[in-house]
Amino acid sequence: MTYQTLNLRRDGRILYVDFDNPPVNLMTIQMVGELFDLAGSLAFDPETAAVVFGSASPEFFIAHFDLNDLLRSMSDPSVPQSRYDDINVLQSLTTTWQTLPQVTIGVVDGICRGAGLEFLLATDMRFATPESRFCLPETSGGTLPAGGGTTRLAMQIGPARAREVILSSRDFTGEEAACYGIVNRALPRAELQTYVDALARNVANRSAGTIAAVGEVIKSVYNSMVEAQFAGFASENSALKTLVTVPAVTEGLQKMAGLQDVEHERDLPATIAAAR
Image (cartoon, rainbow, N blue to C red; front, side, top):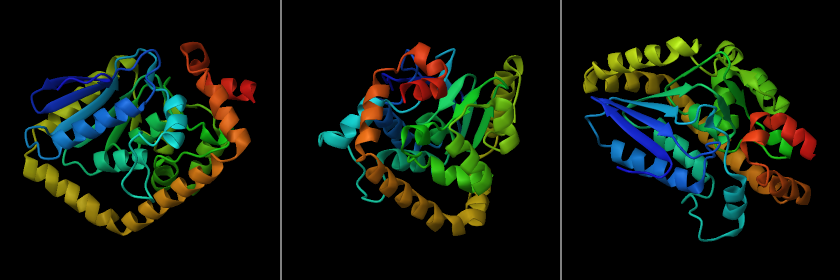
């Protein structure tokens, strides 16, 4: 398979997927479609045990969702939409990846914000360097994380910390992210890939039946939370639809859409503050 925004490399039963949409790895409608396509090919693939997500960029895992594409999706009927009224496309995408039979691992060595963090939260395991930076910047622009991020963050790290991360809209280091439970561990750059590669090989050495059995037990533990998760998604989606109709919010998104370059994205919280 060949994609425009994803680089794929296989090592036995491990599939490595690097986001590759320079200069800042924005998540675009194109990338969403490619991630859906890749997930579809993996749904019935018994040969792949683990999928490891990384980045082709030395600075950005995923910067956030492309604001030009976001604005276009709000007004252009030709842009693909979710088939369900209560769930938007990004929520659907992250749920699709969350339910695959493979073990998914995210590896962050750089900046991961917005939709990038929302996607990361849907992976099974997550690792980062201490210097990596994580942020959900949406509330500083008048909206909220609505790709499943508000819901998953609250479910995974608790409501108090979720409010802090979301409402502060600041960058959190990899060390802070590990402390909060956003990632499993923060490891030095020299050790990160070695550790993840060894972990992925251990996963790949387990039988498909064993991986499935572990997955089913964990699903059984959290089955009671599925209804709550989808209720959260519906609330996120409804709130986003309401908030983006506020003229000041739309104007702010349009202004920020013109600032999606390396210089402004390196310190996005400061860029948003200056633009306001």
